[in-house]
Image (cartoon, rainbow, N blue to C red):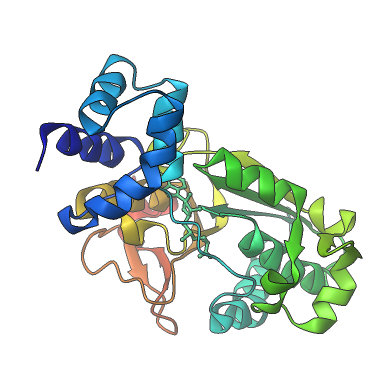
Amino acid sequence: MSAGFAQVKRFLRESSGLAIEEDKRYFIEARLRPVLRANGLAGFDELALALQRDRRSELARTVAETLTINETSFFRDRSLFAALADRLLPRLFSARAETRRLRIWCAGCSTGQEPYSVAMVVDEALRAHPGFRVEILATDLSRAVIEQAQRGAYSQFEVQRGLPVTLLLRHFTRRDDLWQVNDALRSRVTFKVGNLLSIPHDAGSIDLVFCRNVLFYFEAERRRGVLHRLAEVLASDGRLVLGGAERIADLCPQLQADPLTSFIFERAPASRPDRRA
Ligand SMILES: C[S@@+](CC[C@H](N)C(=O)[O-])C[C@H]1O[C@@H](n2cnc3c(N)ncnc32)[C@H](O)[C@@H]1O
C-alpha cells in the first residue's frame, strides 16, 4: 500500500468514521479522480500532503463527502415504520402527555427519504394527538445530500422505491418530471449538516434517534464511540433505531435491544439519567 493511500485512509477514518478495506482502493481512486483533477493533484501522495497541511480545508470536506455512501429509499425497512406507527409513537404520546412535545433526530439522513417517511407517519399519528409539537431534525455529513433533501424533489424512480401511492398523492405535487414534497410536510423537518463524530454537547434529550445504515461503514472503535454518544443524547425512555440488519453485540453496554425488535434499542437501566446518583 502506498504511504499516500494509507494517509488518505487514516484521514477518512478520523474525519467521517469511514473504514476502507485495501481491496476498495480502485473504487476510492475512481470516486476521487475528479476531485484530484479539479485540485491539480497528481495522486494519493499529493492528496495526502494537501490533507496534512489543512484538515479543515474545502478540499478535506470534499474528499470526505465524495466518499459517503448515500443509498436510501422511502419507507426503507417496512417493519420499522409499522413499529413507529403502532408502538413507538403511541407510547411516546402517552409518556409526554404533559409536555406535549416530541423530539426526533434522523442522523445520516442522506437525501431525505428517511426523515420525510418519518414525517408522513408522524403526520398521520398527529390526527389523533392534535395538540402535540413534534420536531424532526435531520442531519448528514454531506452538504450535497442535505441540499437535495431540503429541495425535496424526487424522480419517478425514487418515489417508486417504497412510497405508497396514497402518500405520494397526499404529500407531493408533480412538477415537470419530478415529485415535489408539499410545504406542509417539508416544514415538519429541519435539515442541517452535521458529523456524527462530533455530536454537540447540548444535543439531548431526544425521544427517538434514527441512525440507520450509517455506522455499518465505520470501524468498530468509531462505531462504539458514536453509539456511546447516541445513548447519552437519548431521553431516559427514548429509543435508538438502527438499520434492519445492524447489530451492536456488546459494543455499547449503555444500550439494550428492545425485547420485540432487534434493531430498536433503549438505554440500559444503569445508564438512564434518572437512575444515576
Ligand atoms: C447509506 S446512507 C443511509 C441513509 C438513511 N439513514 C437510510 O437508512 O436510508 C448513509 C448516510 O450517512 C452519512 N454519513 C456517513 N458518515 C457520516 C458521519 N460521520 N456523520 C454524519 N453522517 C454521515 C452519509 O453521508 C450517508 O448519506
